[in-house]
Image (cartoon, rainbow, N blue to C red; front, side):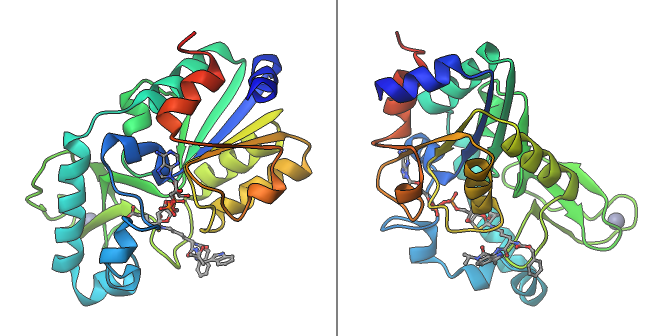
Length: 238
Ligand code: BJW
Ligand code: ZN
């Protein structure tokens, strides 16, 4: 912990990759693991373009339920620690796989949402995208063309938003410290940022409640809840 804290203190450029685990202490379920969403629901029924084409109502019901959980949740100490870190470091980027928007709610600014946002809707006919925070959602048709809206998230088999992904890769290539927080690092291409950071010479620090497939390839793994460890690591509770 002390050594990792020094790497952070001395870094002038930090990039962070977060996953569902950082929002777990806010009461938002993760995807994998014993209490994960994929234990209860099959990803192929809910998180693919094919699933939406087959049963858009079912998919929307699931997203509407998750929007309700997220809206009622509050960012936790880990989100706060990262927002504080951003204010202290010269160059900072927060690459998140999360669609919940909790980083922004806690004040993080340079957030790259590589899997989209649950608060965005996109027209399946004309591609127009808009924000909608209502819960429950009344699912209005597109006001330009009347087409059906879909959640503005990235499903399996879909490409990541090009510009945002390029920014994430650039931030990964040019950082001194790369923090990996609350992700199983099982989903690509996001997980591929970790070896990319390593090959460009960054120190990699992982924070997770358990070891993951990347733990043996990082410089330091801190085991424990992000809401407890991040304030200590970043010195925001000192
Ligand atoms: C705590 C904690 C606490 C708990 N504190 N820690 C290369 C190799 C193999 C496969 C592929 C590959 N390239 C592409 C693929 C296919 C696929 C993929 O990766 N599949 C793998 C699963 C095998 N990838 C894709 O399809 C991607 N698209 C793509 O590659 O496009 C190119 C292409 C186009 C066309 C054809 C082919 C290729 C898109 C992936 C989209 C993922 N979408 C989802 C849903 C988003 C919308 C929604 O939210 O509904 O994104 S799936 C889900 O997984 C979600 C997450 O962002 C993502 C990652 O999960 P995450 O965040 O890591 O969460 P968990 O639950 O896995 O882990 C939580 C962790 O937290 C655990 O480790 C806990 O221990 C820890 N934890 N509490 C700290 N308190
Ligand atoms: Zn439209």
